[in-house]
Image: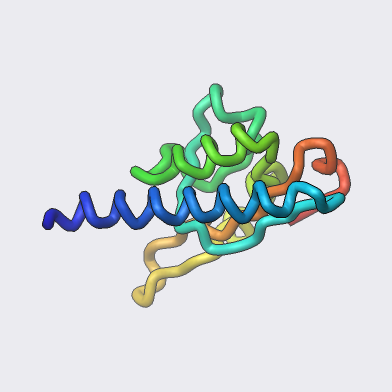
Length: 120
């Protein structure tokens, strides 16, 4: 099998399972999802209501649209990109050679609670 196809299949499976868990937890007052989603989001205007203005990256990676689709369909925001930070404070992963930096850890929160988080 092609590695790209396998990666896409695993990604789809992850978001399907996350959707099931999320729907099961809807009875809770506040849902916060934290983690390494391995997603690089860009600064495309269409995604700004969901991800904000302050992504470290100019363009999203090949799986970047998945987290936006999940957040949008579940009325969530990605708070980790909604605050202006110095670049050194924005990235959450550094390559072993210390030349590549990425912002791949994200915090998703119900849109109605978005003002509760003041900084990430």
